[in-house]
Image (cartoon, rainbow, N blue to C red; front, side, top):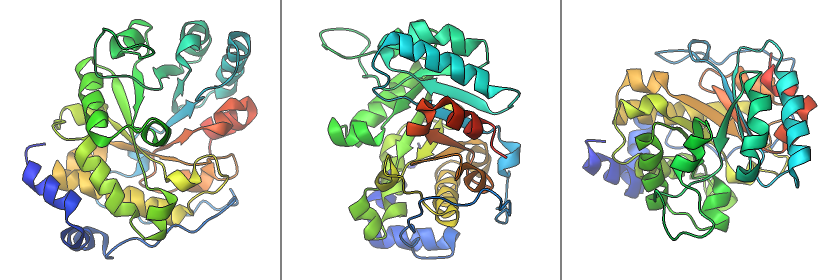
Length: 306
């Protein structure tokens, strides 16, 4: 990004940030998300589309993050086969983020269905004395085009900071891989109505130095941390509001065309019962799915959302 001073001011000045946010959201800050344990899939009403592209003009992108599951390679292969079968005729782009030891065994079974694969984490070094680490070149050599970066579990359990996220973003893009940059607020932050402020900080730091051209390969995943693995989901209007804020932030820091082209996923206990209403929102372009991606029946329904 060329305007680093603007980004820094946006990220560290709460008062200035809220003023800027008001200029293109119409409100000083989004209210804290309302908890929901499920919404009916029958409602198909769309929120009015903003200027630029609607979600229909961006190819939907569903990603399954298996995390540290399953426990053995045979079970992983069977899961991959079942997910491949469940994709059916869906035109949705799909990627599965597999535990690294299982990628080679599972990838051929996903390839036949046109499902891509990716790595769950990497380090910014190419090689060396980094016991237990995985480089982008290792993942790329397996034929995986995608990489997660900055997932909340990496940020919290392994204390991954925004500087490390940014280093990884540059390494991933430099090796011609496609990152999914994960951002989102904790429960304490959401209770303080800081959801958009936290997203702005993580975007500002995570995308530092990333060019407009490189943004064509970037997907953003908004994952409110309080909703991951809890069964709680943002109501669709709040999720849409944050996604709209993210798109407006990208437009401000790059341009509208760049913002219109970036896909923004929602993540946080996505289920077959919640996917339709989430995907009806004009700025929600897909989902990053955890637990439900381990159930081929549930994930098939998510891939084939209505």
